Length: 122
Image 1 (cartoon, one colour):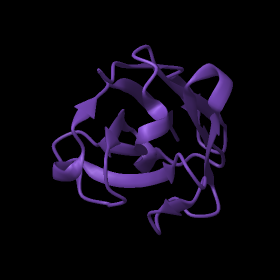
Image 2 (cartoon, one colour):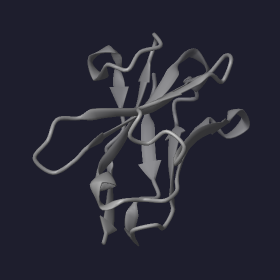
Image 3 (tube, helix red, strand yellow):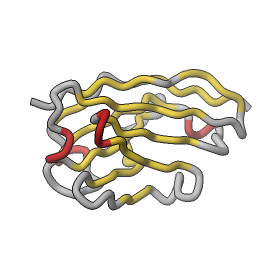
């Protein structure tokens, strides 16, 4: 069973960086695509990016492309979201999720972390 635990959120000024981690305590990450999503205040949850476990392929939303990078550490069963050049509009609760297909749609992901707050001030 996939059990996701996120860490690394916080507050930063615009232009700064943060790194989020998503660890699978169930040790089954290798079967899944791991997605990152975010939910800004008062808005719907939106796709940020994903990484496939088998080939390490990545995909990113246009709004974060070139600023955010997703990577993984197989030995630690952990996926990372490195966020650089942060903007106030990146403020949101960030979630990682595991799914069995490669997709941008939240509904296709089966297991979710608890979420971590990222706040970017101008």
